[in-house]
Length: 326
Image (cartoon, rainbow, N blue to C red; front, side, top):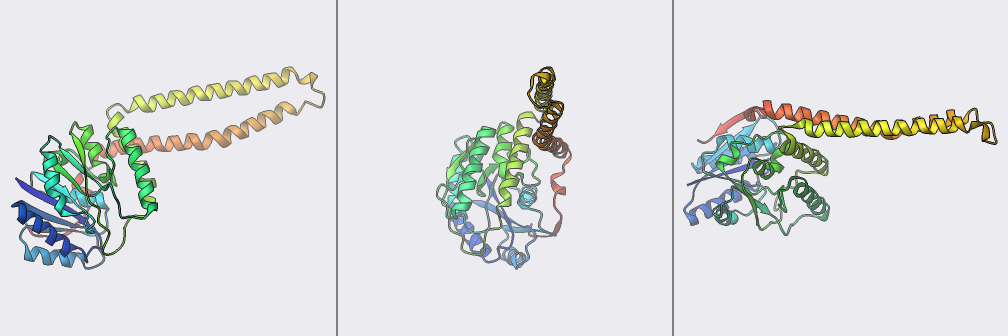
């Protein structure tokens, strides 16, 4: 059994040699047949030079260099396209994932699982990263039915056949276990040690949570209604039409009421129905238009994603500048 390790990186030149050393120590201690694939996602530091150095020193190492930064999903996809192993690990390059966890991941796979996701139960991150992450993980578990504590953990383990059925683009890397479960594969998780970052700084900002929520909506739509989108979109459309009819009926009733009782109102009522209808129209436009526009844009996004997922070529979501190693 051969094990492939796919490690995406972006400006991590200080940590790569240490990570390679730790992986090799685990492999030698357990007599693993491994390959290590570093994918440089457009680094601007000396990361690629370090990768070339490691390739020259160790025949088990290979590298893929992108022409620019395409994102983590593209980097993982490039690595998945290049693997030769029966089991595929993904790890972050910042030394926060501990290679000593590898044997335990393999034991988890032996229980019948196809995907094992790491769970950083105790995190060495500031609260403003930990709290939103936990909220997001709870939302993903609730909406998709795949109960994992840490969907976004970089350390995961897969059987190779799982990855052959999943195409990554955009930022779908967060949802690989969800996509695998939608295809009928068994997913599980394992508590792992989370080490504090030694070098550099996090490459992720607050904007990723907004993007993550939109991606979650897309993944939920694709896994639940990807083969029958009209069941969702048509239902939402019917509900909106029904609400529109009800609201307009209320407007008509209000207008008739004021016209019918106009003569009994003590002050000049000639303008009252007009003012009332104007206020109703303003309220309707102010409240309904943004909501309808928002729903329309989301629906168009769903349709665009359905088109994309059916036409995307996984090897075309990135551009390779250089490869080294076998």
